[in-house]
Image (cartoon, rainbow, N blue to C red; front, side, top):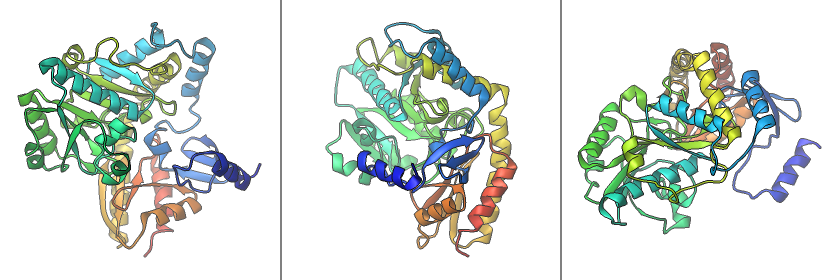
Length: 398
């Protein structure tokens, strides 16, 4: 069946919650994707920061195939070896103590919120605790995750949303202090705002928020769903700041393609929050996805992925800076490692540039604030950065 017919079938049967590009992707190899017509695309989106190892990695694929032949699912009523090993690996990487595996990043946020609210309830028996989140943040589309997402456009059709949530301004510590009170149980934020436009937390801000949390026994929840798993050159973005969260959420590249997320916490939070019956999942952390997690961590260590990201990320940063100096339509450049963004001038619609790039065989996605987002597989090389720059130059207005 041709691409046109396939797209028509999709539009007839799949709920229209995405405005998809008119491309039917068929397979991938390395850092390239191919559509059903045989056209080749350089992928600088990685399935929205998921495919950290690119496509067709034989070591990763073999690990999943082996697990398929052994055991796919058991439920969480029983132990299994891959999940135990995956738990050890993520806790060691994060320097945290307890993990709950979910099916997605949104579910990880839901679990983190529940843990924070239960922690506060355990302390005082009250149910009217408040959470402080950040404007322009994005944490997911379920009702709980929407409640802490700082974009009214996403929230308004589904209000009233659960919980009492107040929004501060990212990188404005005084705006956070103004909202803190005796009912505040958690402060949630992305270490780097992804959907919000690739905005990095300043060290002063992150340390200031952590200080507030420590002094008042408020839990700091850091969302590393997009910026974690090596994307900035450290395993988790917060590690470069030296500011450890009480709860961390993770997903996307955690499984490099299989649907899995996690929220990870300190022992103190674990002991004071979720108990048997408080939270659960049928599929979360099953042997199949756990085998993927284990192999991802092994490959990251064996191939020194974070070191590679620092090297290639610095090169990407340099090339994007040069691009900004050449094109007046680029208003700003920001980011770190292999999560970077170019903010375009208001009269240059970022969606049109992304669509034109696709025609050139380059996959780029966008972010809030008219931003082109660069979140390629972490295994790209300098030659791929050069190829991307040449394709992008061909579609940017002079």
